[in-house]
Image (tube, rainbow over all chains, first blue to last red; front, side):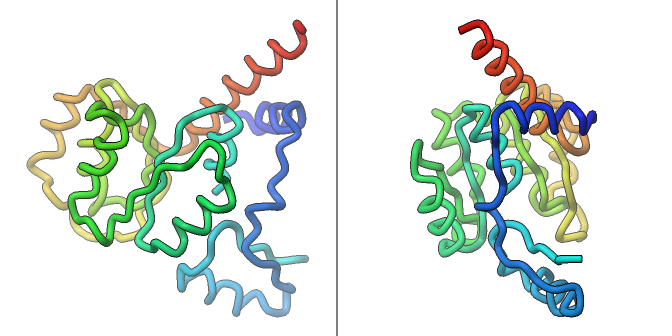
Length: 50
Length: 137
């Protein structure tokens, strides 16, 4: 799969993914974030900021 | 959800499955138009029948299969003839349910079973078509 192609298509259609972020965690809380992920309660993406 | 967004952008009709009505309701509320069709596989063990019901008994064109051994056979049963199943995970990691039915179903329904990211490819091909169309106008 060509990620460049994906990026081009996303840019062309201006799709954003902000609306599928479930939650954002700091890097210090990464352990907790992974625990949360394993619980399977999230809807969408679990983001860890670095 | 990433696939859902791409499928949405590509104009595909979506059948979404979850074991949680709460999650299904939340996603439907977030993406109301056109409405997303839903299946709760925990409530109905014969959930593939629900998917067939949503597609006039024909089955879906494309499955994003995330369950694995306990769901693949049912996914196959609700894929249209010649449809594609894209295996993106195997969350349950159990032994295969209905292993004896697996290959006959694969052959009967002419299913293409593959790994990964075909949804992205379909979305891209539709999106680029759309993009070309936009350019022409």
